[in-house]
Image (cartoon, rainbow, N blue to C red; front, side):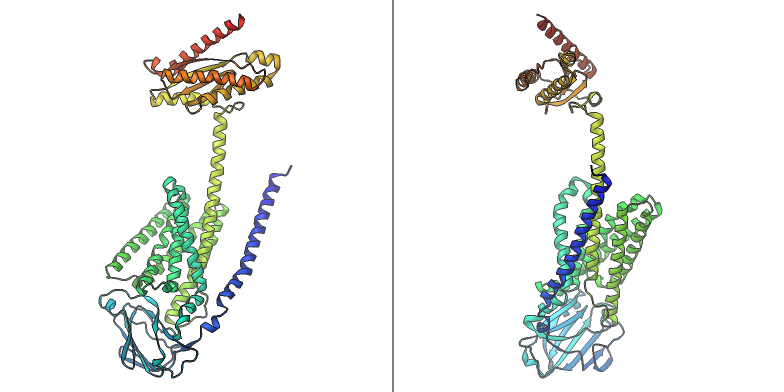
Length: 572
């Protein structure tokens, strides 16, 4: 026989092998898939670079022969005006039908070719104090613009919107969006996965949550996944391919980002509660309240065009850092009491903190200081995906552990209230059931008492094995007859009881006739069984006080009367 410890080791060994296999499969196939996606990137990404020779005016300050790569300036304020001007190249190699890719940050745009307005975006929205968003603009740029003068006028709609300019390029129209998706392929796949996964789980768990609160945590995971997936797709401009207006893309980005902490905070409530520390619990509710108030206020102000989401991003970053520090501390404290599952939590929180820190550094460095050496995109989405898998694993591990404990508890309860031989309810259960009827004042019921005839004789003559068969056969007959009409139990030895939820005499008589027929059928099924059962029943209406003990006594007396009649007939 294999020992339990060895079985446990074998199972863990198999799990480890599968995990290693999965990791190696991902390591082998992901680069191949990635190479497949970018195999023609060198061809489609050919472009005309317009980063040099700009004359730039920011309000009253003039800068000549500027290169956008290394040009930096004091972060602009709301209402500032920027003008950029240069001569376009006279030859556009490899560009058949051109499109200008321009990245804006909370600014309206007017583009002129030789003083003729060819493109306008956001001016009407800025005049109405509406947000214009940040992201790429793709502007039709035909060959006739070759060699002409281009002037770009920007009107800033938010404080600290930018402190540098992004690269300006001309692509082939047919390749412009392909280049965008290829350059952001990792965020595209991670964001799409998080949204699809989150929506799938939300649809499944919505109904489960209505049945049991234990599924709230998996619901929170899926909501968090949707938020972070949408943020990733919007932040990296992936959803621009669906022709969604830039201001709507930015709104999706900020709403998803600002709402994302809430499901995670709700998820962590149980961990905080388990610590039973008033100070930590108070801090939890403060952070939760601040986050709720922050979201409600900023989304309301944004809707009313009073203060836009982009204006308070730095405050949100501070709040996020507070959340990460607090919950990491909670998990570290939990390790003292804990469970290995909290270690997975801690690893997940550290991954999230590291990935978030990476993206924050990259964001501010790129926005205010220029291109950064940190070029990997979608790092937060990677961290979120890893963290979500950890949350799912720990959720199901906790759920499985609870189910095992509940199963064990139910097994112990069943053992305490079940007769070993017949698997019917035992005397203890039947007594408690009768007390329940009495306490709750249930008016309609019937008590039926049974006594197995000839059990002692069978034990003495044929042995206890034959006696046990007789008892089990009696239990089968009683269960077959009265199941669905109440409970059936063994009071001990050769005594049985049925407590029925009906007190109509006609109905009880039908059941008794069926009971007698079932005894005859059982005797035909098993040769030399000679099953015989005496019975007596009493209706609840036969006692004015409806005292179940009295009803039981009446049924018991009638059963013994029936047994005496049986013995007299047998003696003849």
